[in-house]
Length: 80
Image (cartoon, rainbow, N blue to C red; front, side):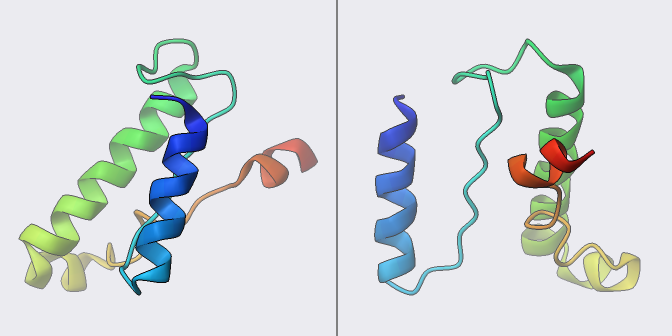
């Protein structure tokens, strides 16, 4: 999928008032194999999403509610 289509989908969901998160990783395409740090970040975010929406009681207990949408952005990474 072209990254611009991801932005279009994200923008449309936001206009509809849906809760959504857009994740774009530098130099990564549809499959993530170039950067192990990116793979780990995505895995953690997916787990947090499952915890929040499939196990809400556990997520509240563990404080994982917003972890899927929190993290460093490309701008944050450039500052390091």
